[in-house]
Amino acid sequence: MLTLTLALAASLGSAQAAVFKDAQLESLQDAGKYSELEQLAQARLKTNPADAEASAALSLALSFSDVGDGKRLEAGAKQAKLCTDQHPNMAACHLASAQNLGLQMLSMGMAKAMRRVGSLKESWIRTLELDPSSFTARVQLAKLYLTVPGMMGGSVSKAKELEAAVRSSQPETARIIRVHMAAEDKKWAEMESELLGAKPSKDGAMLDEVRQATMQLARVYMKDNKDLAKAKSLYEGLHRDQPSKASGSYGLSRVYAAQGQTDEAIRYLERAKTLAGADEYPIDHRLGDAYLAKGDKVQAKAAYERFIANKRANPANVDDARKSLAKLG
Picture 1 (cartoon, rainbow, N blue to C red):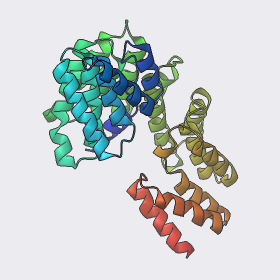
Picture 2: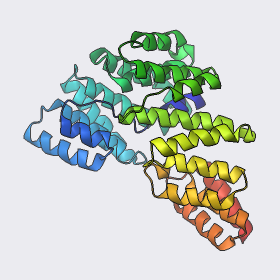
Picture 3: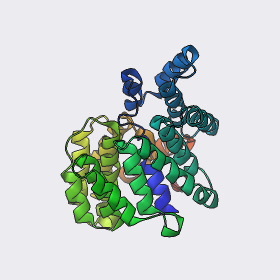
């Protein structure tokens, strides 16, 4: 279940990559402006209830605007079903359905989520049948094949087929699939080589995949301080190439903390707090640890309290923060 969860989690925010032909819808969803996308989609559907792209856009907006809101996720699911029922040959509708289901599965119990793997796979397959050029569908389907057991439809050979089919026509899509194949085989040097070979891109989904894979590889190098220099280099690359995202700054803070450079760790954590995606990381928890390492109990206590009050914080990190806060008295 862990590998499936990681695969699903890695797809969050990856609803981008030329989903819509309409430039305005595409621009809003690629930028992750889901509130504006929702408003535009509703306005268009009010004018024309048969607007397929607006229907898919509304589902994506409902699903991604607050992934922790069960009611909005359910509304997104209903809208996706309406979209696929009314427009069965529209790739965007099936993509919206797959994205919504993936998000729902993250909050399900293990047994229930496992029972939905087949439906998720079929949604991605259908999306790709209708739009063979879909980066998101091809990559997410390949990741699913790589991470679920064979008895549940997993297949390394099918993932390889998805990569081979676009090696010439969509080389960067093929590269990202190879990145995930190398990761699944724990071939870290090969994974690093493929990541470093990725061409600069403005595509939201491509950037998400590169960012997630880079963070995964850097964590491998960070584990037990195995190779902090390589981890730092990877984080510096993210910091340089995706400066508006919190990932690079957060990662660098972890390296500096491991090296005992507490002031630098705090500096990068404070920067990460101001960037997109900050809520994906336990920043205030790490700030509490850093201030505690400096002997600043007042700042440490304030950071831990902020983190514990964050309803979207990872429960495991919250437990650790509570223990640290309790020791402060």
